[in-house]
Image 1 (cartoon, rainbow, N blue to C red):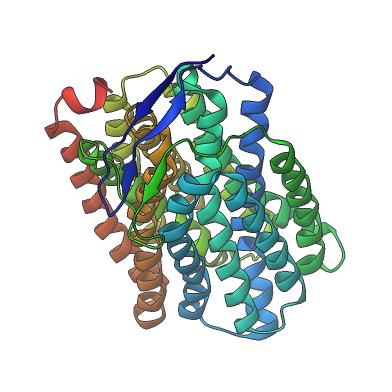
Image 2 (image 1 turned 30 degrees about the vertical axis):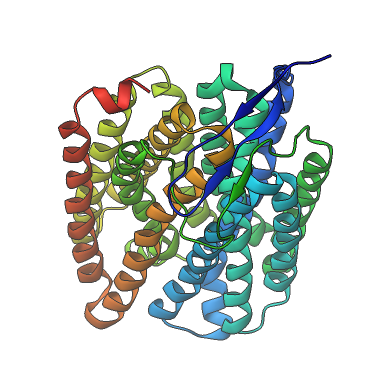
Length: 421
């Protein structure tokens, strides 16, 4: 007869955990291949998240809308994502990862259909909104699923794979879209047919993925501002301080990068635009493998420094019309996001209990994506008013200041918070 024990977990942010009996048996770790496979739905959805980037110039030509409207279309993705994060993390921790991931993948497939048939700005807004909702689900439930399957002994591996799955997919999407839109017929259709196939394979992975219903019942509102358990506030602040400026920098490149390339290069090549986004996120992926053995404090400090340097080079690029410097800025932006993301996720994975991890991941992403939605939209409308060069310069100066502040916050905490986790 198996022994039982009682667990209870304290919570903040509106949730309470009820003590329940639980078997003392420790679940066996899943094979490593399932840890990798669990990351695939994250990659597949993030391919969709940025697949539209090289196609905006085509829609602008065919539909007709300004830089400000373009950034609004982009920002509706952030609206859907943040709205999803208010629900998906809590729901995932209560009912399990699969019941959140399966509807998210279906919604992503619907977004592909809308993108492929879009004839107006409203359709693009709806498609981006659906995409944001799906992404919000995978950055909370999907990343937590990777950690669940990896088990407590492989927390660092789980954080690395989940983070790299996100940024690799984010870069692969615009590359595929850029190449196919130049070489395949019906560019705004064929891209999303390919993406639908990728999402279908992710759907199969989730259906077969090992998983358990949560052992702890969490009480409180189902829709609320997500939070972290008591004692994890400092780790969350450190992650947001570096991750938010980093992802805001890459969001700017995704939304207005093609327009900058058009001004600097005099070309609207979708391959070039998609290639720049891919290289940016390839840097975000590669840097995480390069720094994975460093102390978390070092990773976060380097991430803040990389984002700050990215903004300096962005300002130089637009003032001198130097395409090579613009590419360097994109590389540094990708590295800054990658290190901020890895540092933040690693801190949470190492300290937050599994029954609150999806909500904690959602909280980190809300803190990151809020400025990533607001600042690029502001830069887009500012560029309409004062010109792309001046608007970009002002944006770069503001984000440079935020990145420096983030780095100072990390340095001021000392070693205790980041390296004791």
